[in-house]
Amino acid sequence: MLKPDLLRKALTDLLPEYREASADRLIMFIDKGNIATLYNPPRFSYEYRYQLRVVLLEYAQHPDVVMLAVVRWLNTYQPDLLMNHDRAKEAIGFVAEILDNGSLDLQLTLQLTESVRFVAREDGGADMIHLEEPVPNPMLGDVPDGKLLTGIWLNGEQLVPPANG
Image (cartoon, rainbow, N blue to C red):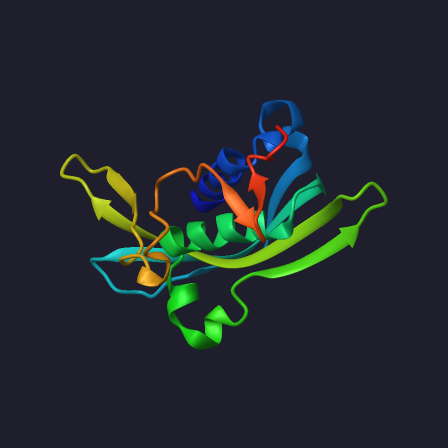
């Protein structure tokens, strides 16, 4: 499975406080996973289907920053969640515990899939190829995918990077 590491990178690119020294404050785990496949020789493929839980401990910025990062990531790596109205209504689940110090523990839940194709090689081996997602959703056309945001503002206040930092 590749998507958890890709999401971790997207989050740590935007939230430097979760990089190396504080990496233990960004926790990811998979539950409710299964493999979907059909018998269809000579073509073999399968799809990971799983729920990814992302936990940010002691998160001190506005939750909009994380949500923007996740929606941008979904636009590239799981666009079907945003293109289907019924699925988009529940694309990102969350639970938050508000802490005394003005921060919160934030848990996000995403329903993800990853398709894998088995391609036989002439030498008797096989290549396992993770298939790319469909073309991203144009919903975020004014926020270029793949480019690091240099700042995020909410009601005129700069959240990322913090105006005082």
